[in-house]
Image 1 (tube, rainbow, N blue to C red):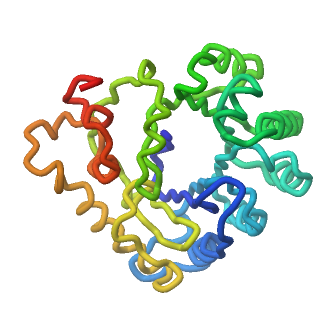
Image 2 (tube, rainbow, N blue to C red; image 1 turned 180 degrees about the vertical axis):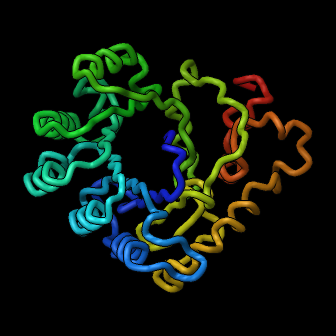
Length: 295
């Protein structure tokens, strides 16, 4: 997702999967330490400005309220990425109403119950989404939508846009599917090929320099995609974050399957993302757009 370019950002995956996963205290640990002092080599509390809580579904984590509340107390801009399934829960709604986040982004997987439940493979998912959306909207929370376009719901593309317009919500569309965090390529088959668009040439990013990612096990990496050489926060503390900039620079080098590419200057994906595609044995045309689609 496109995020603000301000320095001092972290996204924390409270859960690796929707509606299940391990509970961890790593987010609280990082927030407390970054808010309480200035470890050597790490900037102080004013540096961490923006926090994204994601997953899976972040609100299923038992420590979500505690983590969110602490981040809000520290003055951070908090964004929540959610499927909306727990948004209407009284404890969550009360917390978010009393301490409004900067933004809540709900994923929309279809314009109808049939397509939504079919894509998520969870009966009743659409109803819980609608319940959460309506509750949050009535509470006046800042909302927007992420329209997830796949071959399963592409026929409802216009209706999904109309859905967002009906609720007067801003939205962004996502058509490119990446391999799973475990390296599986099964998600790629769900892409709606007619909706894939050419990305702009990759011109670098600030991953590992002005923002980083933390998974549920306390492993800090430069971003959600580039997880190699992750730093174990529970073992090293936030002091370990001072190594992220060097890790980021090394991971962005055109190595491995991209070594020696004469067209790297116009490549449309970063090296970490290209590596994920390569390890999943994805068809070249999906990520290397120097080739024609379908080749």
